[in-house]
Length: 233
Image 1 (cartoon, helix red, strand yellow):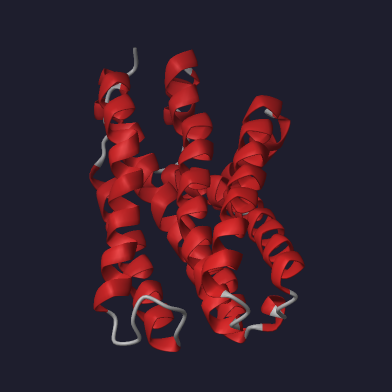
Image 2 (cartoon, rainbow, N blue to C red):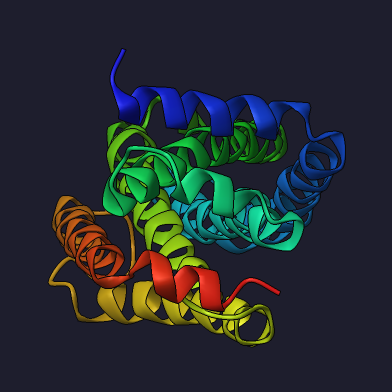
């Protein structure tokens, strides 16, 4: 079994066992779709493409927020309780440790986001009777674009949480979230396909997500173990 897989499985198990974390994620995953469904159904009528685009626009920020929630448990928790020092003594590179923890964050965050998307689609379908679940571009969005952005968000936020102190992380956490959301809106605005659901827009978002993931890996590679130890409270 690879080191990456061992670390990722550890983080997934810890996330599953954290009931307060799962409850918080489930509340957000259900509350936002229910609140959004009424507005989506009222504003888009029964046009399937417009409805699917509205759902896609809601789902991506949900994924980023889920990544932030699970990152706090995977990275900051170990700084607070001091277990990060034990992990740093393990015979594994810091970049590989970051990769495993980021993957362990991205998996439950993605599953929670998929659950939120299913709730949203079910709610909007129930209000409009439109066959939204069969929209190919929405399925592509959920299967490709969303996991890429969740991994990028988990990677960047996780690298920052490793490198920065507790106070700085409290301030920059929401900066990251809103920064991602503004970036998504900006990319959708400049994409040739427009802000709606289109193959071009999905391609732009996918490429941007991959670039952010590469940036996160680069930043994580610059963080040193000494830097992390100095930020432990």
